[in-house]
Amino acid sequence: MELLYKASHFEKAIQRIWHIIVYQQDEVLDEGAIIERQTLKTVVIGGNHYIKESCQFIVRS
Image (tube, rainbow, N blue to C red; front, side, top):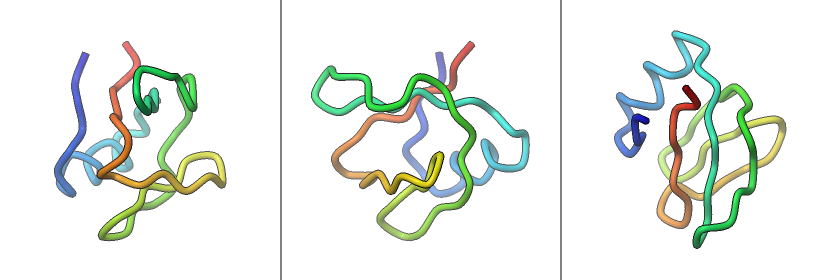
């Protein structure tokens, strides 16, 4: 499992079309969708905006 936390990690995931699992406080918010885009503070997956500081983003294997 690879944890994404830098802007360069998110860009790599976007370019390689990786499926990402999103967690917040040990709760799964998204079970494996593709990142559509990122901003300085958020990641957009499946039309949902996730705050980078509040969530954990892990590459689904």
